[in-house]
Image (tube, rainbow, N blue to C red; front, side, top):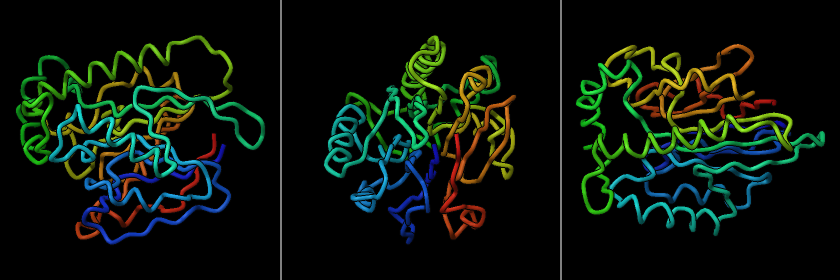
Length: 252
């Protein structure tokens, strides 16, 4: 299957118009497309199916419990398929069946181990204040994010450990990165990096391709035979869009 990958377009502030990649069979939107959700309208009538995994900024200034069904409903009206803790098996042009395993996979703050968790969660408070989200009427703070992350992690592990059935290849889509190897080189191994990357390294080999966003930089590396790719665009004013490949095609 030939996948076009876009993420972190931040259309709430960026002046950018996405265009289809030639010969793509599927478009993957790996989160942080537009915190206002208005930019999702650009993908209505896209020439190939569109899969969307929400990023953290899709929940800015929102009540999390209300935002999930509202965002799903909006995607359905636009013809976009939103996935959260869901798997779907899709046929490709060659007749193979591709399993897509998808979740936002929030930060659990254990990137540097349990001993560093409290420090990482303190650093995360800055990012939570930017989000200004709530969950059940209370601030969506680092503890609440970790709760969501652990649920995502448990689901993801269970799904990837399923014995092979009616699929030929597995693609994982998360918004948050699965490894410290995806850290932004501008910031490295700071405590705040645990707000962007998880330590899911042992799960990576259970997929053929792992796609993520969230980091405003680009990555393309191998863990064993598994390819891990981030094609975030980020903020042009900060120079983050320089390496972005708008028509990047990933084959699996």
